[in-house]
Image 1: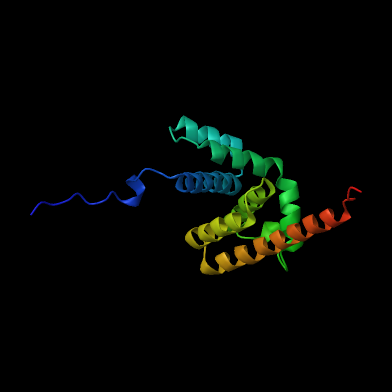
Image 2 (image 1 turned 30 degrees about the vertical axis):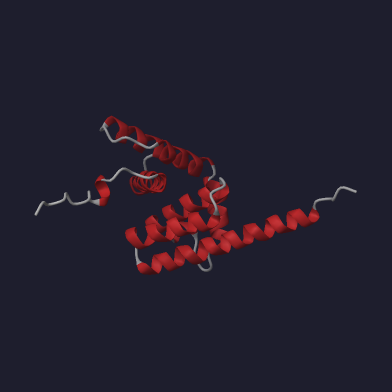
Length: 160
């Protein structure tokens, strides 16, 4: 009886587009988290990673730069929608996940995708309660944004 080789473990399988994007998103979370807890700039953290031979995916770098460029607006949106929470009071990992997902929604990632990925990250990196918190807050933000878009469409003048 010949033995067939076992399938490669998931970490050794060729990455699909979805898995590459998830891995890059996780890198962005790691970089932003590391910068937040150490007080260094995310750009410095990226440079340290590269100097140490840790490649940084293009999408991870894009997300890090996007979060930085939009941080004030992202935090304002999070703060306005987080009942009884201020952004600085949120757990660092939760805050980082929320910032990344908010940036992704602002940059055109479908809200359902950004929210789902954020909830998975929260459950893996934080707590089950964090998954619910992240889901609720991002869902509220997505509903508000879709309501704003609907109101904008209604306010647009129609062609005669």
